[in-house]
Length: 111
Image 1 (cartoon, one colour):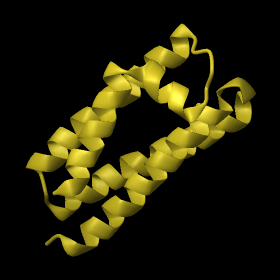
Image 2 (cartoon, helix red, strand yellow; image 1 turned 30 degrees about the vertical axis):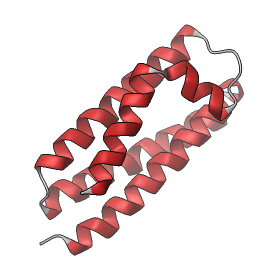
Image 3 (cartoon, helix red, strand yellow; image 1 turned 90 degrees about the vertical axis):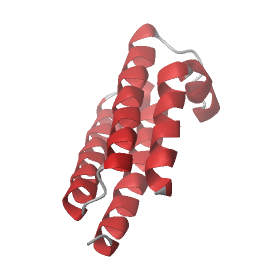
């Protein structure tokens, strides 16, 4: 049950304090587009964390891992295509990859 709480906390941080999170990542000056995309992704993470806390079946957990895997791939593509967004996109890809792997591991343990 810890993974949904971690995910929801991460999502809340992205949604409510995008400038702080992006500053920690080292983005430097944050434009409006980057801030909004960060907030949208934070909302998705928060919602996914809340849903995962209520739906603990294997299929739900593995679907969440698939969403995270898709997110990781798209962020890596963004990092390659937009050098100005490379740092936050790479950090987002790493976080999504970590959550995807954790989801797959958790999904193997859930009946």
